[in-house]
Amino acid sequence: MAFPAALPHGPITKVVDGVYVVRSGFRMGPGVVISRTMTVVQADDGLTVMNAARLSEEGLAELERLGPIKHLVKLSDSHGIDEPYFVDRYKPEVWTLDGVKHLAGTRRLGPDGPLSAGRVIALPGATGWRECMYWLPNGGGTLVACDALQNHADTEGASFVARLITPMMGFKGGLIVAPMWRKYQKVVGSQVSAAFAPALELSFSNVITGHGPAIAGGADAATRAAVERGAAS
Image 1: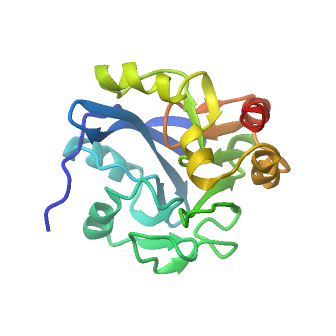
Image 2: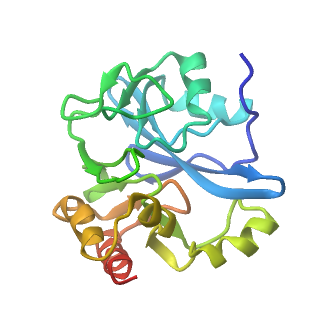
């Protein structure tokens, strides 16, 4: 089976103990490459990958030095282009929400795993686009998101054309509740606050999203502010 080639990416970077990110890109169309971010979590039985992004052979070798890839968590119906590659190469257990498209889950994502201390926060949606966030206790609490929450604090990994057009689509201003997610899920006004309320009830200092740099420290306040702006939009 042919899989999409790896795009250029940065190094594996530690956010807090046991949690790492790799920043790369996603090709949306000719000349349009947007930034994306993969999260890797270390546990006793190996690595858990979230928001999977294929790496170069050198990048994969660096990843494998952290531990064996044992679990793949599908946080969303989106970000699925490189998940089949990870499944084919590493044969991990796949964890998904009920009803998630594009990748058959071998296990149901929830209280049973794959990370015993983790918490799943399912997000609402009107279109069948399932998505959740994953809370981890690492580093005073770390919230891992996919598309609903994004951090457009820089343009690393994005092409020149993407740097021009994505701000015009509302992808700007640091941590945001993504306008495209709000539009397609028909989550507006107070519904935005309600969608994120279960996450904001948890204690966390750090946020990692599927797009943009991780926020280490002060992420709870940044997330509250992003939700308030999203609800007011």
